[in-house]
Structures are given as C-alpha cells and as structure tokens.
Length: 304
Ligand SMILES: [Zn+2]
Image 1 (cartoon, helix red, strand yellow):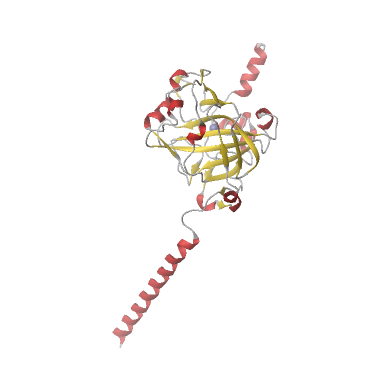
Image 2 (tube, rainbow, N blue to C red):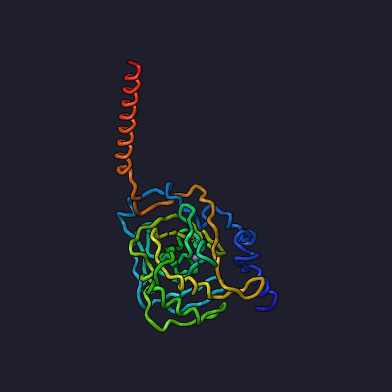
C-alpha cells in the first residue's frame, strides 16, 4: 500500500477507548446508534422465560486442540481458534456455529469492566467466545449477516483462582504489547471457562467494537465464574497505547446501549415464581384481616 492508502485505512479503522472512545464511535460507524446494539443492561424484571430454550438446550462442544495462538490486539488479548471440532447449536440458534476466537473486556479496578450489566450491576471482567454460522462460507462472509455470529458472554467475578484460565493468563507476559503473538504449545479446551450451570439470557445484538455489525445472537451466561485477584491483575498487565504513552490495558468496555424495544429471553425461570409469592400474599392478607378484627373488637370493647 502507498502512503495515501495507508493513511486512509488508518483513518477508517482508528478507534479506541480514549479520545475516539465509545461515545465517538458513531462518527465513523453510524450503526453505533442502530436498533440492535450491544452490550445492554439486562433488567431481570423484564426478561421473559422462553420454554423452547429449556426444551431445546444449548449444545456446546469444543476440543482441546483448537486454540492456536494468543495475540495482544491493542484492545484486548485474543485467542485464535481453529474451528474444527468446536460446535454450538440449539437454544436460540437454528443452525450450527463454530468457535473462531475468544477475548475479554475488563476494568482498571474491580468496580467495572464487564460490557453487559445485570440490573445495573457490573462485573470486573467479561469473556467473549465468538462463533460464526456455518451456513455461510466462512467468518468473513458471516460477520455482517443478521444471523452471522453467536457470542457466549461469561462474567468474571473475583474469588478463587481459576485453574482453567491460568494457562491463558500465564501467556500474557509473552504478549505485553500490541501485535505480540505466541503460539499454543499445550492442549487447552475452552469449555473449562464455562460456568457449571448453563442458564443464560439471549437477545439479538451487535459486535461491541467497531465496525459494530448488528450480526450477533448474544448468549450471556447468568452465573459468573470466579477468577483470582492475581488473574484480574494479569489482564491489566497487558499494555496498550494511550494519549500519554504506553499504559496498562483496562476499561476496554463499551457501556450498555438502548434496548430499543428488544426482548431479552431467559433459558431459566427465576427462583421467585408466582407460586412462591401466593402463600406470602395470602399470609399477609390473613394477618391484616386478623389485625383488623382485633382492632374493631378492641374499639367495641371500649365503646360498650
Ligand atoms: Zn468482546
């Protein structure tokens, strides 16, 4: 490419979490203000349980030799995956999708970092497993189609060390700067990163980084997985370019976007069901009734 083309392509693809941060992305990517943007705040009161999701469970099948390399992209780490032997189907998906990469978003501190939020609550990090719909030729053809991608989101919460995630964080010291890349020299099955319970919320959304294509069926796991303070620190040990020079990577998340009338479905029912509420309502009514009778009888006693 000559200089003119290089500067043009730089201009077209320049985005970050600073001066050209999420609130400015719409200037180069107008779809940022579109009708199915991600992430969103999941308001559990407004989520609808979908029986078809529990009748047709999400099937996730990965392999222990699908991970090829980990790269510092300048905005996250990214594990490149050979899709062979990695398939997800069922649940909200009407065909088979293959894993192509996974990465994460996290905060500089523990009070923020996840992209999706639940009733306004954030987690310190969120992992994204990105899959493409095999009805298309490849991920490049699928990436901008309305049913092209399916992303599984997994919240990280601070707790005990995650032995499954450790081999990944252990590689970060080898990829401190943008474009640094190291090959996997060991077996790793991404399924170890999934929570034990596979309850999830699902909705139609978008990529959360430019070009923000509205092509993602989101599957956000309800239960977070625990990682240690040291593993969160390992994420923050990665470096990126900031206006004031090289700095620790963090707050690389896009805030929640307007729901725009979309429906968020759950594969599970909340613990508090109508059946749980009825006895409490009946007891309260009885208590009020008994109280009222007692009060009236007291008044009558006084009067007479
Ligand atoms: Zn992501």
